[in-house]
Length: 349
Image 1 (spheres, rainbow, N blue to C red):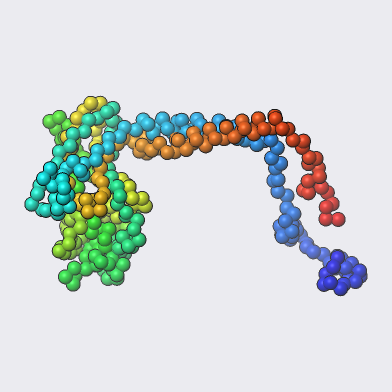
Image 2 (image 1 turned 180 degrees about the vertical axis):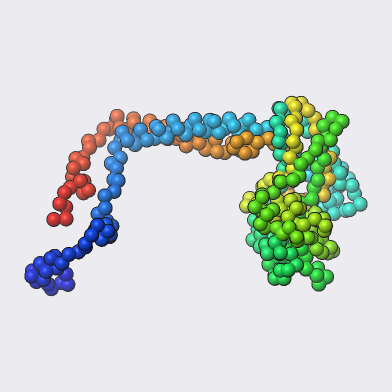
């Protein structure tokens, strides 16, 4: 053993005679440092590879079929109304229509229920081409102010909606300022459908992120009005429209909860929706949609998970068949596994 490049045989013997470790724990540490601990080192033979891919396919495809069927069982009605709710005289200039407060913004939509919809039935509004993930937009808020109100003075992160006429704004920031403010009223036959708008926000947000004693102050009082207004006599923790809106979306197309219909809808029922088309998406080419949907144990309708499972399972089975044909056509002789390094004894001697 060469220790320092010039050691003698007696020095080597003396080095080897020094005990390297003592005790089971030190032996474990030594083996770990020398990478000589027992480990699972499987040999991937063609039989194992083909069987693994087959098993993967036989497991994933049934899961994908069940998931896809569950998703397809969700009944969903999607109605885009932003273009149809503009009067004919303003079709060529939609921005002036939405900014003109003297023009009525009410609009009537008729939705036909395609299948039986079991309560609870969820109502969403969907916005497309709306970038809530823009860096300046996401940063323009104050979480401490939402929780503590006027007691928290450092709202520099809320610029440019930090203050108005020398007074602070609660809640401040561009996110709150651009609050969605379209409203919907639902009628079936001669009676109105009651929409439950409670508990539409996350419970953790209501209890821990918005103050129960924080009230809107000086909000939407400037010359430039963004979205909806807030009730100054209701604490932020109870204004769930705001709470839902403040949880920004990562994608430019997103849905947010509006409420729940807590009675069943029969097939071929016609729902009359009175829409107040207040929100300006025309300035940036956005789209507005009303979504009425049931849910399943997987949530709303989304075929991606089921399709992904079926695709991966089918690909695994196809690969296993390809490997099997190649193995039968050109069989390869196996090496002797006893010559593998981890099967040879006394390799360090």
